[in-house]
Length: 354
Image 1 (cartoon, one colour):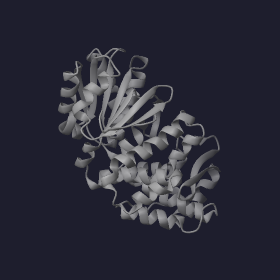
Image 2 (cartoon, one colour):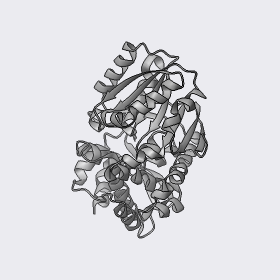
Image 3 (cartoon, one colour):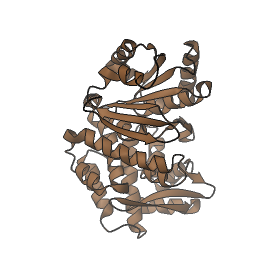
Image 4 (cartoon, one colour):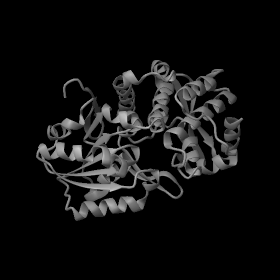
């Protein structure tokens, strides 16, 4: 597509990420360039359905695809095995085959669930990610992590399953509330902290909306490089969990009333404080992160005890036996992965909350 930015991921599946404006209008043709017209099952939530589902289906149909649609109630509370089951039953009822595709139209929850459905339905069918939130655009639509939540914790059941194409229409971000947009800012600042001080500075002041395509491309390229080196999250890719171990515990503890990006923001500030307390980070790092988060309307603290946070952390999927990997920022643009014994997690949480 003219004027769109293109990033290519060479993982177990090679695929392109297109970033630009007006992409939804040409979505069908872009998919057709890579996938022969077939049945396209559009999976979305009830909020995004009202905004974009008809336009996406029309574009697909004009390119020769037949379409069907599954919409689930919007929100993290739908990200469970019941919704996944309904999704799979829908695909079967619509007689979707292995020659057909799923189009995941929505934010991170949609991409995670539709991607998981694609991974397990008939042992795997192709899917296309169409992120409509800033968080999904800069992070979750790329890299092939798919999942649902279990009662024990977030993203506890899932699969590594790469999409065949990612189409990011920046125009869709114009309809986001400030709160939902801020979820993506948290992930963008995360990329800055783990490996790009310039990106952090561009985003830290809160005035960067004129550069959204460039910022999305920067984040996606960083994730692309990490995923291509460590697709299955055994080493380097764990850097992308900065703020997430504490953040997931906070998110779960709140009953998901605190959104993912807001929880990650709190987690990132807390782990920076802990890194300073442990002597791993340069002085003032936590304050820099705190100011950047506050400038972007994100929270930096939580009224939970160290014990309450520890309870969630110990159920985290990053636990390996008696240890949990934490990502500690050392300065803006650099982090280290450190394994912490489970018996030291409460003390770590106390340092973070100090």
